[in-house]
Image 1: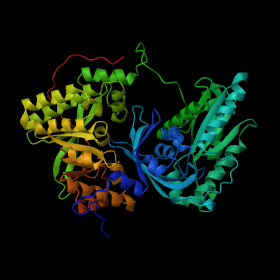
Image 2 (image 1 turned 30 degrees about the vertical axis):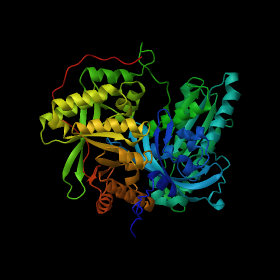
Image 3 (image 1 turned 60 degrees about the vertical axis):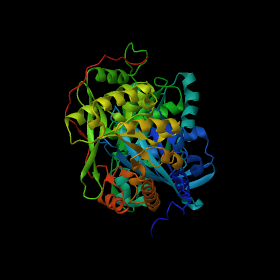
Image 4 (image 1 turned 30 degrees about the horizontal axis):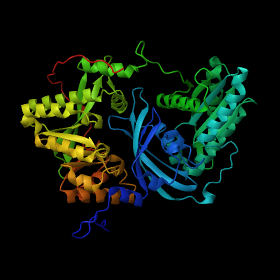
Length: 564
């Protein structure tokens, strides 16, 4: 059955993407994992209901809404995904029940996480979809030690209040059963639950009388150790690891070999607050999981640069890279949906480190925005792109421009000067702005985009689909391309709602007379559906990964220093 049209008769009554998203129970989000800042699409209240704002603004607070034993939280799904970010994210997907202000719902939560400077997940972008209400018999937990994350933090705070005044340390161990996805695949839900229960009993068997054990977030356990010195943490963790690994676990579905990964944090050395200790132990656990370690990873205090007034090392390193001309472009191909013919490349920022490798863009760009440095890098990307286009007459590039840079008159003036000096290169340039950049001052944004168009470049709206921009404003923008948010296109195989939504967005683009790019295209089924629905271009691992361009001639300029 074909999707119903967005458009009415001649009065062109249009259904806004925001309203359509709400009608199918979906909301997009982005999560800065390092700062635990969670941002939602504009229809969050319509989909999630009256969930307190303080809960919606923090990723780990939202994870506290997950009903114990119902499934992995988003945090667990990301840190136990086992994937690798090769430049455009690693896929995660989970399903859980959550208490949304008294309304218990089954939720599918899927997206991609992006690696940070330390090699761990730093940022995530995805879509949350409400499935149906939870039936009471579906949540019949019998484990007396079962708790959610908020209850765990409360238990840690209680232990701290009891032991710290008496100068007794408190250690938080967070332990996870490794390869849970594989166990679920081999043994099914019931068999995996039996394995988790056996692990819980083995952990209990080697506990001291004064220790506390709690099972939370699916495959995770927290163990609170009082009066455990820092130099004995590894020995204590080893006791639990060996108890689990001593023999295979028998279940009704078969025999499994189970390993435990452990992260640890100690009070008062690291912190005196339960939430900080739990988060630190979970972060240490993610390091143990990523490295496949059989010993505990102990959380340490973060290190900052010496004499930098608290400026992070990353900040200083990024500025040094700009001064030393270590900013590069990685080019990812965008191809026609029909015929897979290369149409243009997206130029992605890459910053080389002196010792080799690159700074992680997922963590770098938000930091540059916070420090007020992103405009300097956007200027450099424009310079590199125009040089590339001048040297390669057959090249077509798209570049991303930060909303903060667009608010700076220097960038648009620099663009106009560069385009005026080389109009042939400007005609082969596409300037991408995010959908969120268009909402603060739409009239000003329309004027800026018009100035870009007047110089011959094309304009694209990136990450389109979350519903930030109204169709009235879209009509006023001189846009050539809509890039559909990959968080929606990656779920086409599984979600009929996302198939309907993406088809509707494509119909909208056709009505506006603009071309479309589908991001995050990883398999042939996705590509085939999108092609059938009329998408113009495809971008993703199926058609090509980002590769570094050859170094071009650079323009010398004055050295820079980090903002204070």
